[in-house]
Structure formats: C-alpha cells, structure tokens
Length: 397
Image (cartoon, rainbow, N blue to C red):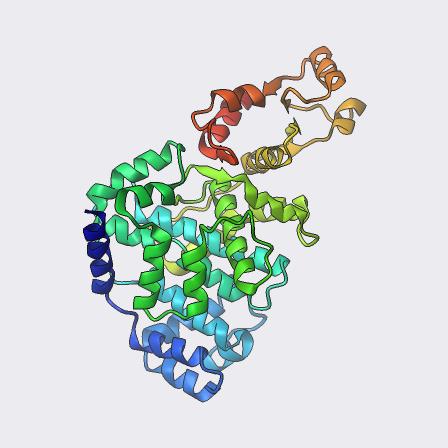
C-alpha cells in the first residue's frame, strides 16, 4: 500500500511545472567551469521577468550595494556567477507555478516564511563556519522544506493529521511522514530538486537536512552546510518565524557552541536580528500578509540557572526572543540589577535560591515544567511552543 502511495507522490512531483528555461540554463552554466560571463548574461537576458527580479534583489537590503546596480553584468561582477544562479533559483522558487493550496490552518505562507528565516540564518552560520560560498547555503535553506509543498498540495487530506500530530510535539514531522507515507519531505524534496534540475550540491543538502548530526564531524563542505541549516532551522522555531510543522527543537544543534567560531553571544545576536531580516526579505519576495515582527527590548531581566547546557541555552534564546535581558548570578548577588525572575532546576545553587527568597525574586522551576511537558519522553528535544507559553504566562508577558 505504501509503495503505491510513494509512486503517486513521485508521479505528482513530475507533474509540477519546470523552472523557466532561463533558470535551467543558468543552473547548467553555473555548474560548468568552462562557461563564461557572456553566456550567463545571454541566459538571463532571455527572461525579462528574471532580469528585473535579479536587479531588484541586488539593489535591495538583502545585499545592500554601495551604489545602484543597473545591469546584469554588474550584478554578476558584484555577487559572482554562483550567487546570481542562487538568486535566480530563489526568486523562481517563490514564484513557482503550483496548484492553489487547499489548506486553511496550515498556510503555505507560514512554510515560506520559515524557509526564509532558515535561509537567512543558515547564511550567517555558514559564514561563521568559514563557508566560502554562503549564498549557496542561503539557497539550500530556501529549498530545504520543498518536499512539504508536495504533501500539502497533492495529499492534503492525508497530510493534515500528520501536521496536527507533529504540532503536539510528540515526534518530529519527518518521522511521522515516514510512517504515514513511507517517504519523508527531505526525500520528496530531493526528487523535486532533480525534476527542477537543481545542482547536485544543493539537492544533496536538501536530501540530508534531517540527517542525524550526532556522529558528524563537519569534515566536508556539504556536512557544514547541512549543519548550518539545522542550526538555523531550530533558531527559526525558537523565534517562531513562520512554521515548518515541527514544534520541537533538537538541542543537539547547540553543539555548534563547541566550535571556536560561534560563542553564545553570536547566536543571541542572530536570533534578535532574524525577524527584521525576514521581514525585509518578505517585502522583496512579495509574500502575502507579511508583517514586521518586532522583538521587545524592555529593561527586565531573568537569570537562567539550569544544569544542562543545551537546555539552558534554549531557554536563554527564548527569553531573548521575548525581549528579556539575561542576568548572571554575580550581577544578581551584587544587587546592581534587580531580576524579574530566575529559572532554576534541582542543581541550581542553594545559596542563590535562598537569596532569591529573601529578595522576593520569583523562581520558575524548569525541572517541574520539563516533567509535566507533553513531550517529556523525547530525549534531546524541547517543545519550544509549550516552553515559550510557559515562560510568557509565568513571567507575565
């Protein structure tokens, strides 16, 4: 039965209209080391819409040129051949001519917005990790959840219960897809990339973006790009920019803090600027219903004193997204900054907890929340929707 369903899915992938001829040609040229600038300009110039979109993108806040770019040749000189190809892919993805979706509660705009957040975040993480071509990681981020579009548009009645189950945070979406369809959105995305003749380097990242990273050592360029997308994927869920259907973050992405390139502060900065960057990109891509989501920066403080480093960092990222400032134990004890609250577990320093009692500083018991959370059996995962709701209700925001 599932084999028949997989055949139907793959048949529908082949029915999706191809990219414009100019984009297909551009992909071929960008993958050919013998191609030259003249061939690229000729390929782009055959499509007036593509030309105008590329020029509009190059002159937007996405790239921020010092002076206006008026020709495709200037764009290629400024960005490079690979970046122009990736840009052409990006604008084509967002204008892909697919069937009108049926869904009401699971909107495609939410998925696109999430994909934009992942693309922008992955580009920055790739830069942190020394990627020589972060724009390619940006494009892979745009592409990474394309397989979901096939499920949502052609198999919505079967897919809606899968999305509902994933929203509860019991298990990751791709695992639920595998059970329901015999194939997951990463695998479907790979087939769609092949159908669209997207370069193999990007196709492989799409196929691998849910690969278990626990055994990886980021030895290859593809490994690092997959990891960059996984980091950005989880940051986008923490910031709740759009939705990819998954309520959980997989805390293993925080092993990136073990690299010398990315201290926690850089992740904090990226999380805080991501909503505005997504909004700017949405304006460029003409996404329907886009709104500028602003992060509050009120002068209230919270200290997080939880033993597990990864859990602690997820809480800190969520607090930053809610607009709180983070405070250390030393700052609390000095009394220079009065904390709004502290978040503790069984390992928190007893003297700090005693001090908080005498100062009437509220203490939020994370260990109790973790035990009561609906996804308590999922090792290495935190339901950020539930955790964020708990923080908001407990802290009064």
